[in-house]
Image (cartoon, rainbow, N blue to C red):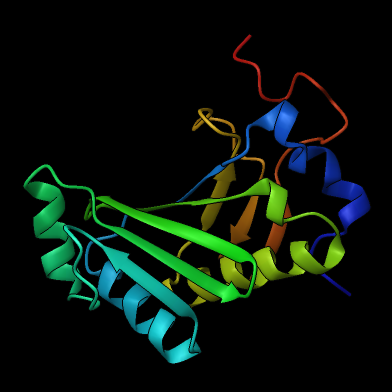
Length: 165
């Protein structure tokens, strides 16, 4: 049985209500960017790296150094065709990425997201949290490293779960 069922979470995947690009983060990282790059390559996921047109995947140290120099390296990853995960290097201390809710409709695509969150969380040994666009203090779901599974963190039926009130 899947970690999350579409019928239980589909309201969280409404782009009109929650923004098209929810924020996903792994906090408390230091050397983890290289582990992430190794994961992408070992899984055989398609990717494209961009920073001033550089086609080759650099080392994590080079990516973090570029971010420290006021650039924003971007790594686009396709774990499966038609599902894009965009990693943006802002700092070494967190791995930040976006997914597009329009690409994640239905149980099959939810399972792809869970697979990505689980793969990253297990490899890093850290939780991976997804929040609605622009609401970093309101995790909706994610991979819980202690539970070793993807979990729902809000009541998806309550329309006020993401408000700051």
